[in-house]
Length: 186
Ligand code: MYR
Image (cartoon, rainbow, N blue to C red):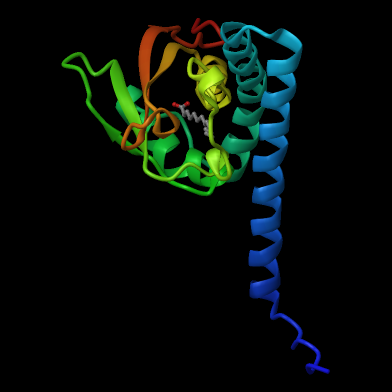
């Protein structure tokens, strides 16, 4: 009989619990997408639903992000994008993104993910070619930014599930609502 495995150290145990949580999250998301495909039949409808789910999550997630990260108001959209790429993705997805492809106005940029835990174990069958599998993530960004007064349009321009070399999410700031100072200066 093999000797019993040595007990794991605190760090190793924490790492393996985190890995199991991440896998459970990935598999659960896959099951949700599969169920939506069954229920809604149209891939376009599933795309919309995933985006809406993400939006709803994002509107709540932003509070947790701001509380845990201690990030205060960013100076501009560029700084906000960096915060999301380096801290936001890390906090909720365990990876960081690269911010790139800025337009001249500084209002559109791309988040590029080389590694995307959401798609571990995923292969799209030919019948799902129009599926935007990661729409929940673009929805999360849209929802979170709306809560800090930034209206955005978020679309996927590269997707490894469709044979691209990375995941690239394009974020376009369409409206920035200035926050009102709540007191009158008089
Ligand atoms: C500011 O007020 O300017 C700071 C705004 C920070 C917004 C952070 C949004 C966090 C979004 C989490 C992304 C999760 C991706 C999976």
